Amino acid sequence: MSNLKEILINKKICKSVWFMRQAGRYLPEFKKIRSQNKDFIELCLNSKLCSELTLQPIKRFDVDSAIIFSDILMVPYALGQEVKFIKNYGPELSKFDFKNFKENDEKKFTKKLKNIYEAIKITRENLHKDKSLISFIGAPWTLLIYMLNLKNDKNEINFNELNNKNLEIDQIINDLNKYLCIHIKKQIEAGADVVQIFDSWAGIIPEKDINYYCFLPNLEIVKFCKNLGIPNICFPKGIGERYKDFKEIVKPDCISLDSEVDPVWARNNLKNVIIQGGLDPKVLFRSDDEIFKAATKYIQTFKDTPYIFNLGHGLLPETDPDKVDKLIKFYRNFNG
Image (cartoon, rainbow, N blue to C red; front, side, top):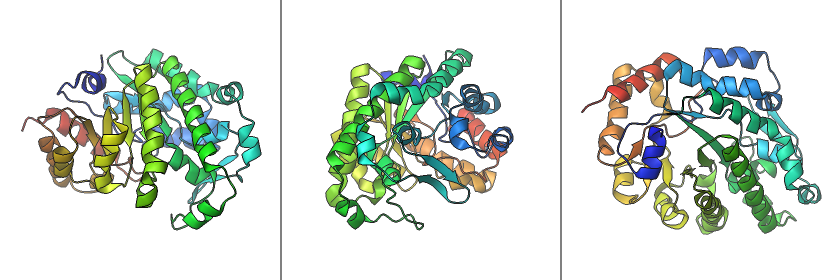
């Protein structure tokens, strides 16, 4: 059993390290493949290349877990929306059509994502049995932001537009949860053994709406994972002290901290749940001593409790891979 699963399942205090976006933009070997594959969606549907990209950080750093190279927006793609990634802007989706959305079914959905499941199968075959293979999804709220094109150029959300849209939001969220659970099950059947749920835009939900848009949809997915016996990690980024409410309501196996959450506060307030991450990815732009000092704070804070060493968000494109290597070695050799 991997150290990651020892922590998630058996609550064992042992060392486990992996990083969000560890397979990607900061690695020279990734950039080489990406330069030869301009269409990001096509790249995500290339099973052999996705497996190769997934394994790159394993080969370079020997991290404890692999996370499949994919994207949360492969779900809207499979549900019929056109997804484009615009350079220096980000993802852009075609206009949401509720009628077309309702015409989806499980067979059509999984057929469009079959290459992802094949990538997981290939990766599992080439990954040491002592390492976990993490699958992931975007939570319904975060997917809605993109599917309904609610985010403007300043990363601001127009809630009036959301409320005024002549859409069956309840129905969309329920259907999204259904297809997300299907996607999880297929990834697990292909060989993944842990799932992470990214609610990357949870932090912008108004206080009065956070239960409806964040807590309850995540709860349904976590229940599904638990019924499957699959360890789950939730990342409700940006919700501050509502992490405590999230933990009490959703009851995930593990909760991943963003960089704004004070680790001491988390240790004292998030009881009976595994903690992951928290270290600011921008710390890796600093000197080695500053990186090690920042890492030490997290290591020391959680030294007496099961903890997964990770970041408070994904590795940034400008990150020096040598800094990542030094951080991993520092963590593994730490005996303070």
